Length: 464
Image 1: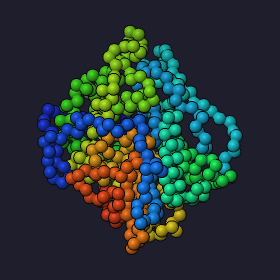
Image 2: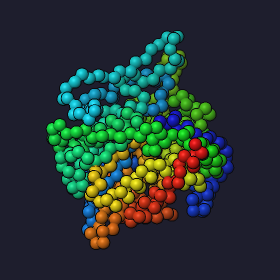
Image 3: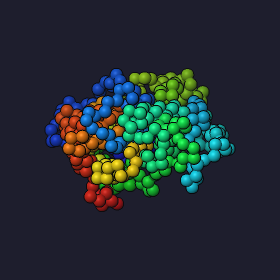
Image 4: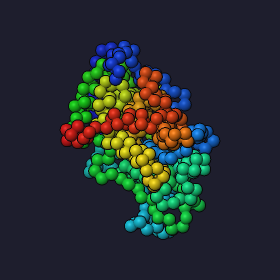
């Protein structure tokens, strides 16, 4: 998700009131401060875990009929420019771009002219007064690391859904899978990288037709922009007045006072978006093994060697703060979270529910056995929030996060259950709302949960 396209998610409101939230079930808590919790030891913002052939276990006495795989794109450069940045990013080579686009459905030739992107900056009075990173990467671009992550994910999916369960054929067949991405290039390239691992060249017959890659015209329900739904703007204003958000914002004043000047994004100007900006800049550098930035020194015209500098503690704090402000509060814990998610994610929830219903109704006659949805962090989190996922699951989704819905048909009686895997493990829910065991959730119960977040008419509900 582009952090600055998500404007009006939450507005800034500072106060020293004690935190007191009204949860969805009506209960209250006076000790609610999840942004103070330590990060789990197994949390890695740079790399999500995946299901593997060695650890994956089939559901006993059942047959896997269908899978929906929702993924976050792989590692990328920051979507937030670091002003006066003199770092270089030669992390976006062409060597891994081995899956090409097809014209008019025809197979691509093996050879052809190629290009390599280069990013340049200029100096002088006739230019803007800041520079961004130089190299061969653009802002928010999938890097070679991101491509490698998704190729590995595709390989693991092959181990599970080709070799172990037989859901997909060993050699690619036209129509075996459905592919949808957002219109952003990093999600398209991530999808292509997954396909490289899922069906390597030796598993693709000569002159096989290309896999259609669908994108939604207009506003994509997989990654909605809140400004398209006027009702969301009013709701986010109300969320910003709730006591827990006010207390959180006040508690982070020391952190934003320190980090804001280093990165050039003062919280006083950027509001809630400052937390996401800090996380985005720091995590993207950390994941690509680049030094965390120092404050710009106007005397030397550089950030290198100047003081103060951001450090690993700042990255940890930014991770916790951004996870709360962007995801946990508006999409799970606020008293308005359900209504918010109905408008924010209801369109995509309906797509997933409709697809599952069609598979149950038509069985193997439906066609493809797996759907791959290549999207963003907000795509993953809006589903986690609707399911009331555990605190650990509601942290910012690592690069290449994968959320999988498996539809199983049981031998006795033919009933269907859904298993939900998040980054290789069965998704855990909050203890206060164990609405279903997601290792084997009755399919009707699962789809009812999705249906609870689907508006009758989204345009009407948004006030568009």
